[in-house]
Image 1 (cartoon, one colour):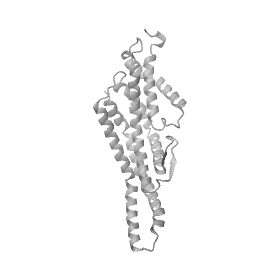
Image 2 (cartoon, helix red, strand yellow):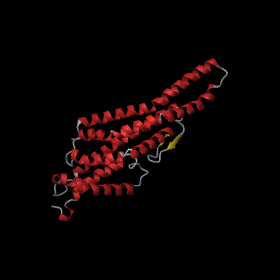
Image 3 (cartoon, rainbow, N blue to C red):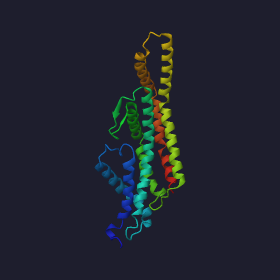
Image 4 (cartoon, rainbow, N blue to C red):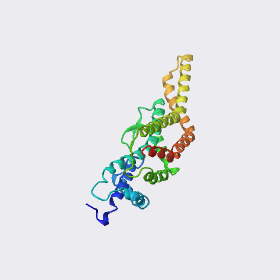
Length: 259
């Protein structure tokens, strides 16, 4: 059965909308549970209306007009959009991991706050680095890069053109490893400072046995840790900006593995 003329472009628009909605639903900041579903749907609809004239004509011929033969492509559109959003989320996860490591060595692992985005308990330092990462993401206009990558994704992986290969898994593993290393690099100054403080406290406890080291070690550890964290903020901000600044190349590599 052929679709009526008035709705001939609806399947193409639906494919665009599903990919956009999948990205908004999985990316950090906008994809969190704290953002109302109505807001996500409205933004997905608005972006789809803006993108449809730009990308719709490029693959309209690939979408069959008869029946519901275009429905299987919706699953692949969810996959492609989810991969793009998940790739961005991996960068944010690196900052959360760095904050969790720093909070653990500072002795703040028991003092946890509820993350309003995930509704989970996360270390206070991790919450701070996550918010700092979001602000960095917006300050360097990385969301513009994400929208540009969304437009280019229809050229890289058009509807009915996605293929999950062995290279796709390799790319995701490599990205996860790189971001794990980034998290350790961000937390390294605090970890090194805490190691020195613990060694110094051990020496003091041997030199002055009468001193209650445990009463001094906890506030000293927290104070030194926050001082080192404050001094390291320029480095942390630069690392965040560099991670988000290379988002276009990262997304190009991931999308390239789906062809």
